[in-house]
Length: 164
Length: 287
Image (tube, rainbow over all chains, first blue to last red; front, top):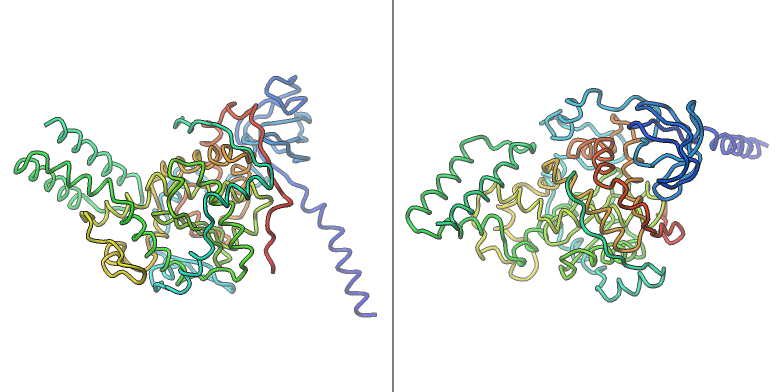
């Protein structure tokens, strides 16, 4: 009975899971809400920076969203996941974080499962055996091509992007 | 004389990168290098260009020897995930993506390492590692391709190599070649302690550049162009105080900032491009 009870509890938890996992997002910048996932599709409304949305589905570079300003398709890159205010606070804080100035020299406290921190990386000793193992998995260019062909991956020409 | 001017310009450009990165060598080192270059230029016209070629350009053999040492150290801190099929799979995806770059013939190596951290590492010469923590976040093969392509970007533009060369001021002219395999003392002296270099922040612009390269290489390889931005979106969702992103967030601009920059760079250029995501072919981690 106890086992069944646990099972039911697990089932109940699983059933609840999707509701919790329904994805929310926040507009990173102002953008149009469109009727279809195309740049020239009809505009149904527009999102302002910081507007909250529910993400319904994804199609390439587009997300179907529901918001107080209407429902429809918005460019994926205009949305960040989550509804928390942008992490790190001010832009200056973010830049400090980005450049590594924030917390320089601080030893990272690790809890439980092991991660990688600067101290560990600094103390790391060369492991020849492990490196040889890593090198043994190498794929040749020709094998990579076969691997791509199996999934019908087709190459296409595309120039590198300029720095905006 | 013209050569020397260009050389000096190149030196100031490389040094200029410094100020924006977290590496702060101070003015003394900078002056020391500039002084050395100027002195050589006066003593032997043309020599300055040689010194600089030692700094900016390194032979491919040296590049690989340096990368191999860093990779061996990194693996000393975090071994490979014990799953042959997984390791072979990431090498297949990685090599396919790297084949779309201008350095398809480097001896590319890819691997998944044991760490719950969300991170990926690149070492010169084509050694690239993704943590188990990051791999577990991936939804499809295109996302893996994007992550590996970002690291390929660092390798082909020699971002880490430039940092090392700036910090050590060592002329690499041909003395470092690894004689066969094994721990290389000379190389180790150059790269500092262990795999410390892997924990160093690159110039922010180097990260933004690698992001743009990631999108383009994945697209060229036939994958969905928006797979890499989707990974950034996912990582940005992980709380800042989560241990698993401490090092990543310390050494990279925040994913939100990276997304904004990438969005500006991508614009409408990818609107008519079609690619695959391949969710079914993504090799799933065994727990």
